[in-house]
Length: 56
Image 1: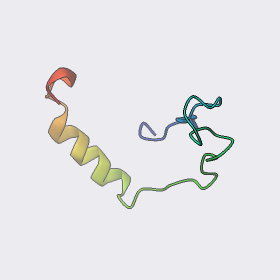
Image 2: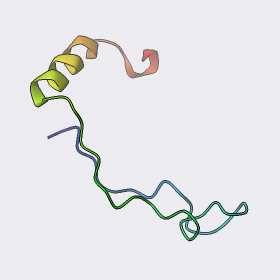
Image 3: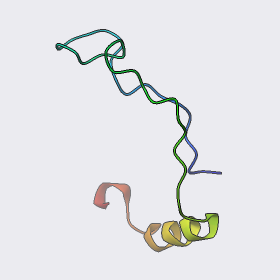
């Protein structure tokens, strides 16, 4: 399923600014699920498929 992404760390592991690191603010361990069905997501994607990525 194309909308599922793999876990990624969006916060730096080392502290570059005070209190902004995974040590102070650990990433969420709870998986977030969408409220939309697979059919709704495919319909939405098909409506916007013709728009070039640079124009989105």
